[in-house]
Amino acid sequence: GAVVSQHPSRVICKSGTSVKIECRSLDFQATTMFWYRQFPKQSLMLMATSNEGSKATYEQGVEKDKFLINHASLTLSTLTVTSAHPEDSSFYICSARLGGGGPDTQYFGPGTRLTVL
Amino acid sequence: DAKTTQPPSMDCAEGRAANLPCNHSTISGNEYVYWYRQIHSQGPQYIIHGLKNNETNEMASLIITEDRKSSTLILPHATLRDTAVYYCIALFGNEKLTFGTGTRLTIIP
Image (cartoon, rainbow over all chains, first blue to last red; front, side, top):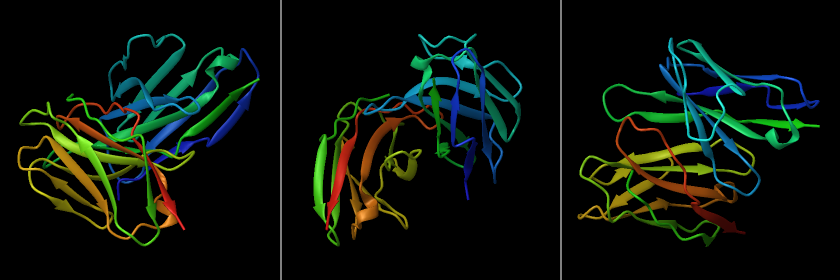
């Protein structure tokens, strides 16, 4: 149980285009999902918290107009990288929080590798 | 979140038990200790968590000292597939996860 999927697994795009990444909790409902970014040889950095039915909460230094997050249902959150540039190339990972009956646990997707040319 | 300290790297022979230490001397009474691992180019994988008591599941055992200032994750019979970066994180039950640098565990054939 507690499986999270991401689509696509990798994407290559031209500079200036927008890219949408989907994150789905397959066997549980998640009112809260999270988006992380990881550059080579670095640890994961939290970008934002995605809340079902409300606006996302962004971490300091993350541009909300550039990284659009939509959490339209209890099983789906999307991250859109708008007007992508080469410096946005990174490994993007989502997680979904499973709660109930104890401390919540976050389960992670397999990640999406974005390359912007 | 309480700060955690882990050794940057460790080696372990295949088939032996891998014992990964974590210090969390400033942990508060309601903070849990969570362990995740990240295999290269994959998303992090949840391993185990605990509050006060030792915990065991199909993946690992978590030993927490009585004063809760440190803990040890034990992989009982390490395999090559256990090579990964292991993260020890202390946080309250509904807090968001933030990752430090973890311990890079290499299983040696």
